[in-house]
Amino acid sequence: MRAMVLDKPRPAEEQPLQARVIPEPTPGPGEIRVRVRVCGVCHTDLHIVQGELQMHKLPVVPGHQVVGVVDAVGTGAEGFREGDRAGVIWLHSTDGKCEYCSRGLENLCVNARFSGYDVDGGYAEAVIVPVAFAHHLPKNFSDEHAAPLLCAGVIGYRSLKLSGASKSDRLGLYGFGASAHIVLQIARFMGCEVYVFTRTATHKELASRLGAAWVGDAKERPPRELDAAIVFAPAGPIVLDALRALRKGGTVSLAGITMTPIPQMDYSLLYQERVVRSVANSTRQDARELLELAAEVPVRTAVTLYPLEDANRALADMKHSRIEGAGVLRIG
Ligand SMILES: [Zn+2]
Ligand SMILES: [Zn+2]
Image 1 (cartoon, rainbow, N blue to C red):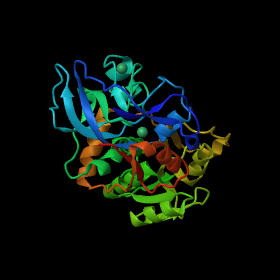
Image 2: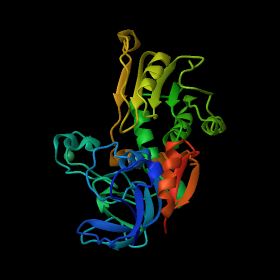
Image 3: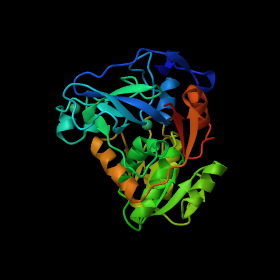
């Protein structure tokens, strides 16, 4: 099967992924094979191909926002049949028994494995997933519009929950890519007023079009204090910008898997019970809730399609904020 393979991490502009034909995988017990139609491109993929995360497996096929059709079912795999549409998320498997799994925090499982990182992912014509970690997708989404929900949407949704934002709150979004453009729609549906901080002109336009109450640069102070904020940009200094805009007792949640160092700050910026918290991965329950909510809103994802072989270009475009909404690879 065709796949985009990473042998050695390099900057996205240097074509780190190589188009190659690799053996087609076979599902084991409890697993299904998904014939990939589309796979979303995520910032985590960019961090992986550029070597900004510790590598778990090389060579590796990235990709963890897969939409496809089941074409092989392993023994004992229940819940999906051949021909069913299926979604694959970042969380590939857990041990189901560690301290964190027992606490309902499978996103923190000590033996968690991740799609396109610990196991080959969806930048390929087929992918294997344990059936318990595959998701049925809402019917009112086309393949390409569903793909960005699977990580950008899910992690954004978890970040929104952990920010504590609720009805009538003023929510700040720092950075406006695939995840934020979905969160904005969900937050508005919940009754939040959304303030978007981004430098990129096309992202400002998209935010306004989707109903942002205010749009500005990260350094700007919004006209009113924020009740909650989510930082999507992987830049530590922005955490301080968000704290400066936050009311007493508000929370800033950090959605990224990595970030440049957060600068030293005066305690006064955090004092008055402001909270800064990170968000790590997400649970299957987060994915189920997000998919249901996305269908109810309904969320309209903005997508730019690339052929599989242009995965390097898609990653470079995302890196340089040239994509409006989400980048998606078309494969099958
Ligand atoms: Zn566990
Ligand atoms: Zn992701």
